[in-house]
Amino acid sequence: MIYTRELTDLPLDYDDQEDQLIRTGKSLPSFSRLLRDMFRMRRESTEVIIAVMITAVAGTLYPLSLGYAINSVIRRDYTGLYLFASGFFLLYVVQFFSNWLRTVSSTKLAQSTIKSLRDRSFQNLQHVPVSFFSKVKTGYLISRITNDAETLSEFLTFQLPQVVSGITTVLVSISIMFYKDFSLTLYALIVIPVLAGFTFSIQGRVRLNYLKTRKTIAAITGNLSENINAVRTIKAFNVEQRIQGNFNELNVKNFEANMKASKLSSLYGTVIRIIESLGIAVVIIAGSMQLQSGVTTVGILVAFVIYVQEFFDPVVQLSQLYNSYQSAMVGVSRIYGIIDSPVETMPGGTGRKREFRDSIELSDVSFSYGTDQALNGIGIRIARGEKVGIVGHTGAGKTTLSNLILKFYSPTNGSVTLDGVSMDEINTEDYRKLIAPVLQDPFMFRGTVYENIRFADSTVSRETVDDMARKFGLSEIFAGLPDGLNTNVGEMGRNLSEGQRQAISILRAFVRNPEILILDEPTSQIDPDSEKLIIASLREYLKDKTLILITHRFSMISLVNRIVVLQEGGLVEDGTFGELLDRKGIFSELYRIQYGPVDRYPI
Image (cartoon, rainbow, N blue to C red):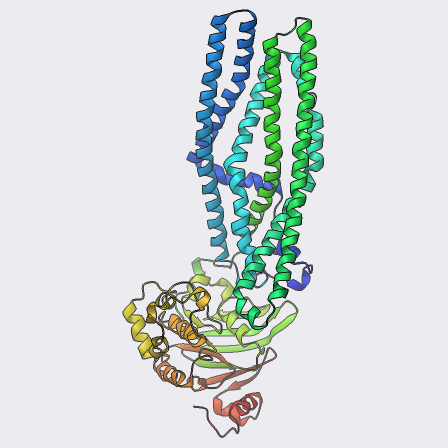
């Protein structure tokens, strides 16, 4: 599936653009989905539930044991005192070990869940269309997978199991309280409406504040990623102060968002404690009156005071959980947004394609980036084994054409077919096994030169790489490296020259032995002597292959037997080298600009 939403249709603010491209769900559905994901890990979730239940039961019985012990003291019943005091101690020991088990099991469950979310996010990013990445900032994606996932850690490991245990304790405690003294229990619960009203009144503001903090930290991550990658350009143009100012501005926004969220969290916790003290005061007053009339005992009154505290402790934890919950749900909903992003169409069945038999054909193809028309009504048929050059001025649409052939994008109008079958019906993974591109801006991965060359096929041997480097005249390009092919390329290939980067890109494509080879300015950074060696070797290599050569230079044009000329997204000329020179059109003019009079041949 290809994204059809255009940037011009979106609000100007990037956060709004990102929210429309990567949908962020609401808290409750995200929480329900998260619970389903957690319960799929049956062993871990079962251990957590058992530990939580033991903790809850132990927590509800020890206040009652304390109350009975006090009554035993008043009655001078020392046998009962020793019995209930021992029970009180044993319940604390049980609760200690169950809390330990809960912490260990919940940590394992939380980290397993976070790992699963990150794995699924990264997996989906491997299959979304290239157009997705042209609309979303890299740093923001990184922030979703790292920072947003990390917000779940404390929530799932400590707060959620603790509050579930607390809520279970509250429910059992209330049952015991109603059984022991119905009217006093009603007094204890009189503050519940106040608590509920305050919580619901503040809910929306808390979520908005935490959403703001997630967005501001994503902006910082994106800014850092961009500036670190562009450090040479920043230093070259002496704009460090301006870049620092931009970062400071983002940092201040993040600081302010966190402070606002923190103040609201603190307010919530403080008000909850005030409501708790009000509830305890009500129980003490009502219980004292019942004590004077002989309705209840001192031990039961003490137990009720503890039960009220036990009741409000989970509520206070809930206040902390609520803030953490809002932050975590904002984070997990943003992660689910990545997981749910539509992927490229990769059907099976009749869409399988493992060989190239006849031709690639573009029929009345148009394509636009937003409102910018890149291609308009292009019609080209490239037969199997044909060598076609695509030339034109910068911005003519050459690279866009190759992107359509590579199936990075789908045309806005028209169709692209392989052997008469629409690209939309062909399995993308199978199709790309037929093609190897040498892109204009080759990307280098961390590792050695050798590891980058065999990136697309890890089964390629060192001997094969060495042989191909010699065959295509590229050995000398790597000879100056300190460890030859074992040299570490550095981050994004920063330890290499542009020529070495392009040489790696060429070998990366050639060792794959593709049926269709797309060369996009493959030798623009290689010296003339090395380029001539590559051209000579390519003539033999390309004998049975289909070549699409994209260039605005003519040094490699002798490799093709047909030339297509693009201008402003349209096909304006199509023919052989000699035919196009004789027409005195755009191709002839391009040639004249680079080589002078048309009677001079570049090769």
